[in-house]
Amino acid sequence: MAFAEKLKALRHEKNMTQEYVAERMNVARSTIAGYETKNRQPSHEKLSAFANLFHVTIDYLLDDEEPSYITADESRNMPYDAQELLKRFRRLSIRSKKDMLRHLHTLEIRDGIEEPDTDSHYSETETLQP
Image 1 (cartoon, one colour):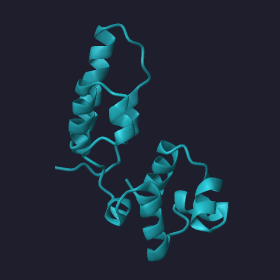
Image 2 (tube, helix red, strand yellow):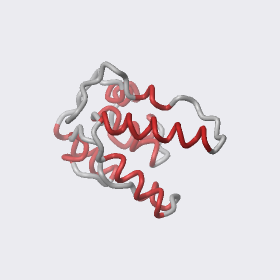
Image 3 (cartoon, helix red, strand yellow):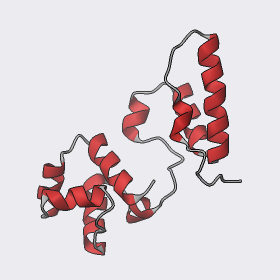
Image 4 (tube, helix red, strand yellow):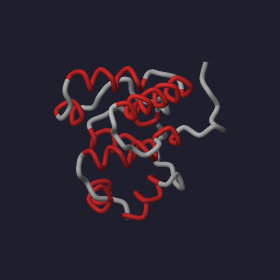
């Protein structure tokens, strides 16, 4: 997950508005919007301030890999088996994630659950990991 996506996800997870984050960071709301849409990159000083605001490391903010753990907010609202499933899913390659989503879709059909096709999240043009 890129910095822009992580920033937006962290902001939503903490129920913060762009305006609130902008005030805490001493920048304009449009600057936060720019960070979230990949149009702008924060300075090291701002990265440090974001890390402090969201209680994460700068490495976490800059690491493009998806986390292989579950956030505190997620874990409070999920049963253990769902936590384990999500943790293991996040470690999979894109190819394996696609396969797993296809299998889940088959199980949903068997169980009579009507869900939209979630397989489309991983496009066919994405580079597949080994």
